[in-house]
Image (tube, rainbow, N blue to C red; front, side, top):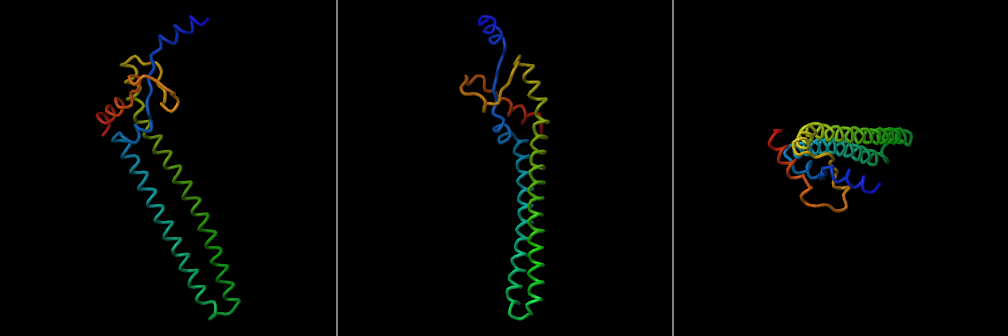
Length: 157
């Protein structure tokens, strides 16, 4: 049994790749990450602006506290609380939308590079490729990360 298992494994060509490095160091990956970062910064700026508006509104209400009646003050505070609740819902929605956008962009990146990796595997008779996160130790010669990054940079602009 062990002899059969051993011959099957040795007949299989293996390689591993650091997918994080491919994303971070390939030209397409860098463009993808920059696009994601721009979206994040834009949404963060929107959130900060709305948050500042709420702080200003809160300050206005505090300044009016001694000028307006208690009933008017309660109405103003109730409006502010409603705005804060709406803002928190908005923040959750923005965060959820951003995570979906980020995941979609990363999936799109890997969809674009997958044919190149498949082609490389076929040309080099590699049967199985592992993500290096799942590898404890292996020969450096089995790491194809840099080769894949070079192929991506040459073939996808």
